Length: 391
Image (cartoon, rainbow, N blue to C red):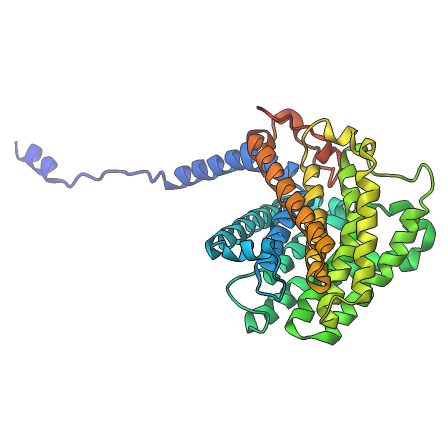
């Protein structure tokens, strides 16, 4: 009896097995499955060409800011725009900011998780040009911001942050053109190559807004010299050297985006829309008419909706911006009608593209059959994946 009482008084030791590592491994496995099944396919499909969307929205914000600014122009259209509440412009600017931040975060994730695909895109003759697009978008958004002026210290810091990557890409691309010569340039040159020129011109305009005239002239001259080389090369491209597929033909609109942005940049540098700005504007207007008078050129690309359609909006908006500055300088009826037409066309095209994109949001997420091979960086096939509108 005593023995039994002593045994009952012995403290019982309970062995507890900690399952925390197993739970941690299970959570990590769940995160890996989510990345593999959902995030990774999106990143594999996503490429720098999607920054066409941010280019369009940011340029629209700059257009509405320009048209709504006080001026000596007493035209009824501008007076009507000044009557609109400032909240409408802030909402547009916020939408552009949201789109640009979202696209930038996606591309940063791709750089981290799929660096090989980003490297392939950097080495591609089309994809490397769209690496200018995010920095162009940020500079356009900076120039259209309603929260501080170009004289603010934030403007100075952000200008450097956005311009340095453009200069680095310039050294890479223009250095290849210079060292490898005409044969190399005639092979790789395509309409998207003009984004490198536009990047310099947007940077020049932003610098001129700060009052940095020397920096603005530096970037303007760098862009314009290479624009002349590129423009002549594209004019003289040999048969069989057109390496741009039919689905990407909307980027032909960049032909008049570059001289339009050049006219705006020189306007900011000189302080007035003088003769050089007018000549560049007339050149862009001529190139615009040359393209729209040939709808058969875009027939194949318009059969099914793709992200490449967003390439229409940005050039039209830049042309409308140039027309607005021209109308303010000339102050004539024809100039104002032209400004009104181009501005309305730009807005309508942007709205139509937003509607088409909204109707096809579910199709923008890739399925397993549409995932690109990991060894493909930027490919025209990315844009050739059809997104049929659902009505």
